[in-house]
Length: 339
Image (cartoon, rainbow, N blue to C red):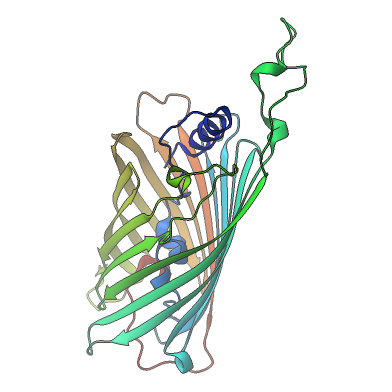
């Protein structure tokens, strides 16, 4: 989802000048989508396990610096914490996300509360259903924008604009939902974010085109042990994620490979629709020690049309802790976020 800042700026200027256009904003994304489980699907709240023996709590931090060699890059940070609680029949989660674009020109911050209900369909099959309530605040710094009437001869932007600025802060509620179905070796999930498509325009004369469109996510994968005894410390996990938001659609296909404490991974991202292209090859290297996990990934842009945006960096860290009492009713989910 690469055109966020262009979408916002063009939409802002077009609305301010009185033009009508159809433009959509987009949510930020993470290449390590399973290292940000609550952001990928609210049904993932409470799915951590303590050494695969019972329920656990989990705290995760994700950092993404997209196209750092360009001026006005995109930097996204997320923090989440979640825990399964037997007394409420599911998991609780808290998710905070901050996205900065254009060297502070446009910032978006959100805080979410999440509940996921756990249902054991039978001894081998389980399901979780999640609900997410969110507050989003978007802020724009008009002082960082240049306007045509500020140009003075060949001296540049030194004049004072007569442009009438709108509010520089917009706060809106938002809601999302998701579900995940899993056995001990397979998982599949669906999530729908931005259910009410909140309005994010900084101007009062907004219309439906200034709404944040729904984001649809489908993800699935499997866990294949490489040891004869079936231990998951050495395992292979193919997986994919399909995501669509307005006219932007993408497919990530790849795998995790675990060898003891080390984990490697590789994915290929293909975009469709108006931005159709072979987008990036994503490479991951990480490790896990006890209940701590760290991962670094690099997005290698393979689209020859974007020679100036050759890579993006992403870091994830996760810390887990055991619940005081194990939950015998829980079925282990083989999602890579639990490795």
